[in-house]
Image (cartoon, rainbow, N blue to C red; front, side, top):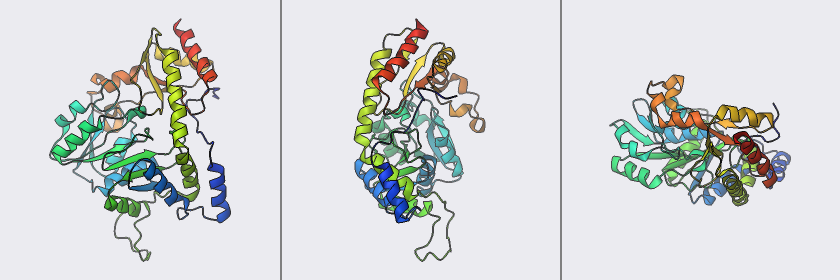
Length: 350
């Protein structure tokens, strides 16, 4: 079904075409091209980080981060219940065990419940900045300090939220705040971790490049073509965030006071405009008939078949998953487009 108002679309309004054309005409289309380090440096600098390591996806970024921290079988990683399943998968790829913590009313990990899940096998806390809301990183970093744990921030939905953990991992999928089509990037202030992640993403070739590989590694490289797009997006990130903040303000103003809609706390950066809706599925059908696409919330990790725990129906993460959806959220969503979407929501509840 084609929607007049899709839930997301990329904003390619800067130098993306120029940079991709330059990559093509120069012949540098692989991961060896100059746009890869240019993007890494620009994105790291924007976020106040020392090092950036570009890779093939946000999931790859999380995998590289955990591997660089030497997470493996027998280890545990604290992961939110309310997140996209890739957060937990990265832990499972390492042979480690994700230990899930329920969400609070802002959908982020409930920091009050983290300590009770820590065991002698816990190695890492992985907060996820859900839909662009920054987790309580002061509390998380204090817990990590007290228990000598590492922190890997899943920032897939939070470009513009400045990292404070050991490693922050961003997705550059087409529906994210900035994109390279497919891609990811890790940020860190630790030179050793950055070097390890760069080494692991490129199949762990030795300096001699003699096809003797001393460790299991990955082909998680980003191409020069993708990096050209990512660099242009990074150069335009301030404008993108400002435009998206206006989208958030427009929805806040237009949806306030509707009996049946519960607005959620404001976001530090807007990835998706999320809300709680009575008769949610009927609302989605109504909006779809008028060309407006919506998406459901994440389901609890404990409801996922591979992580199934019968406790999932009692979780906040489940309660919100059953009532939540997000509306079309993209950088060039106009005021008139928003007015149309808001009017259809109000029409349903009238």
